[in-house]
Structures are given as structure tokens and as C-alpha cells.
Image (cartoon, rainbow, N blue to C red):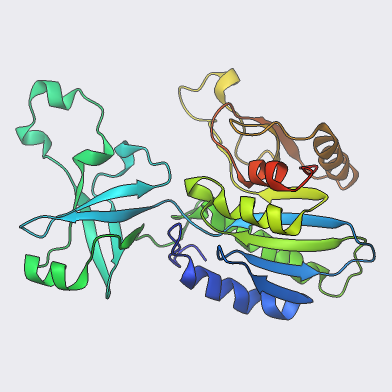
Amino acid sequence: TCRIPGAPGYEQRIRKFIIEQVQPLVDDIQLDAMGNILALKKGKTDKKVLVAAHMDEISFMVTHIDENGFIRFTTLGGFDPKTLTAQRVIIHGKEDIIGVMGTKPIHVMTAEERNKMPKNTDFFIDTGLPVEKVKELVAIGNPITRERSLIEMGDCVNAKSLDNRVSVFILIETLRALQDQEVPYDIIAAFTVQEEVGLRGAMTAASGIDPDFGIALDVTMAYDLPGAANHEIVSKLGEGTAIKVMDGMTICDYRMVAFMKSVAEKHDIDYQLEVLTAGGTDTAGLQRYAKGGCIA
């Protein structure tokens, strides 16, 4: 799923793929007006569990095409500008067009410029096409996603959009595992939109479903890297799933945290507790926008 584009607000292609995968596995599937996929596995009682995995990815949007055909953009989601240099991207205009991000070459920077942190606004996209062709195929507002293949790297994988396609995969496979199982509560698998720009899909899904319980599947930071102090690490790669306790937008319900810990311990699943002082996930949307709140 990582290669399929899904900029916030432009999730059409990844949504089509997910529907094809999920349709045979559930009792009902609906799309809401925001574009969330709501896939229902019926339970034996009227209590509802909403499990969310966002399908969008951090991306960009065209804001300007200059007289030479270079494209300026704004970000859709949070980017570290240091990662943008020479990044290959796909502009989704009338056709999909490959481009590469560039900025002022270091050879002609002043000493002051070399010592400054780059900003997103320092970058442009070069498509290698003449300006007339660029303006024929690209328009203001077109979404832009990164161009990257998934590769195996030692015991890991490297790809764009693992945030959050790995969780999309997990949620699809969970529905597959439950296909012939009875479940006590209704399970609504919500493949949400626009998480990267403010949890917007999760808010709408929670408001419409009004779940009793909410679980958001997402990635987190593994900062077990050179230079990291022990108190900064948050989580370590390979040491088990991270059970969120809090982040910049959520303090998770202590009952849900205790439940997840007990399930992990019962089934000998390695876990670590995540306390992240910034950022946020769909958990915040589920907690706040269920009509009476939900345990999430």
C-alpha cells in the first residue's frame, strides 16, 4: 500500500484499494461525506468499538508555477525541511509527473545561509519540462506525493508512507482474521482521511458512529539512535508494540491503557509504554468527538 498515493483530501486511489480488500471481509461498508471508509463487523450486543487507521500520507500541494516552470508548494502535514533536498516527488495533475526538489546550491550560498536551518519555502520542484508543458499539465492546488519504492533493509523495511500504511495493513489483516469469528461488540474499522492535517476524518467518524470504545492504530517515534539520551528515546525499534499513554493532543484513558497492557501480558506480546510530548493521532479525534466521549 505504501506506493499508492493518498495526499490529505485526495485519498481516492488508496481508498479504492482498501475497499477492494475489505469488502469481502465485513458485514457492511459505507463511505461518509468526508471520505472515510467505515467497515462493520457485526457483534452480539449494541456496544461499538471504532478502530481507526488513517489512509492519508504527508504530502504537498502546488501553490505557484513560475515563468521558468519551477513549481512552488505548501506542505500537507509536518515535514522536517532537512529531508526535502533532492527528494523525488510525483505531481498529480492531468497526468502524474515526476519532479525533484531543489534549493539554492551550497556552492553559491553565503556563510550565513550555510549556517541557517532550511525552511520549506526555500525549496522548489523541477520537472525537467518546458514551462508550457508544465502549465498544460499542472494546476494550482494539485496534490504532490513522494516517489519511493519499498525496500528491505536488514531486518527492516524502508519506504515512504509507512505512516500510516503499516496500520492500514494491520487493520485489513485483523478483519481477515475475524472474518469467521463471532465478536461481542460491533467493530467498525474506520480507514480515515486527513489525519495528517488535523485528525479531520477521525472527528467526523467518531461523531457519526458515537463509539463506546476507540482504538487508533498509528506509528510512533523510535529514537534509539546515536546521540539520544535515555529519557528522550520514547520507544525502541524491535522491543514491542507501543501502547500510547499520552501525546501532545491526548491523555489516553487509563482503563484502555490497562486493558491493552493486560491483553499483551496474557498473550506474551512484547510492549512498551509511549509518552510523547508532541504530535497527535486519531485517538484525540475519537476521544473528543464521540457524543459523550469514548474510552480510547
